[in-house]
Image (cartoon, rainbow, N blue to C red; front, side, top):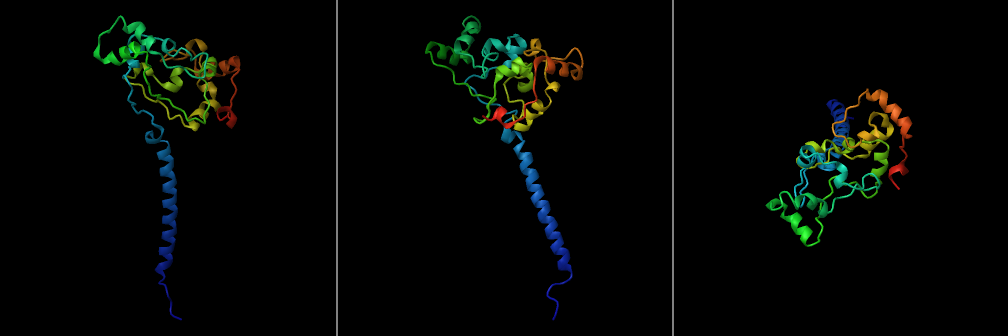
Length: 216
């Protein structure tokens, strides 16, 4: 019986299998890269707000403490978005006629809140409590980045589960004294490898990585 396939068909079949494996592996790798990209996580993406509030100016230049606007950060799961009255505490006296601030004045006159868009917006199936992280010595900068250097606020980190677990598995790498939680540009006076484990013991920090910690 004559041979149906040439001997080169064996090479072609092997090459096809290798090609399919490479294509499958490449597709999986591409999906993993895409899932961590800013296109999906929205990290470093500017979000249009009712007013383009500058943390660089208010925090960096004027030195306003985080807690002046985010009043609930030490006592609640939600840091809190400041009401218009908080803005008007200053802007009824300074820049009181600036055109860019007319939406703030209109909001105050009409008793109608400004509709700020959340930048760090976790999925509904994720439970996060600001107050417990503050009490355990996790600085604002650890999650939110150097907001005092941001003309417009952006999501500094991916907020992916692996990013959260990186801290939950090794809190000693990130914990700082409670007195320094709101300090931007914090640098420990002694190496983090020394002070971190000490604070973990002092604050009773546990390495919580079970699903129910965040998914309730």
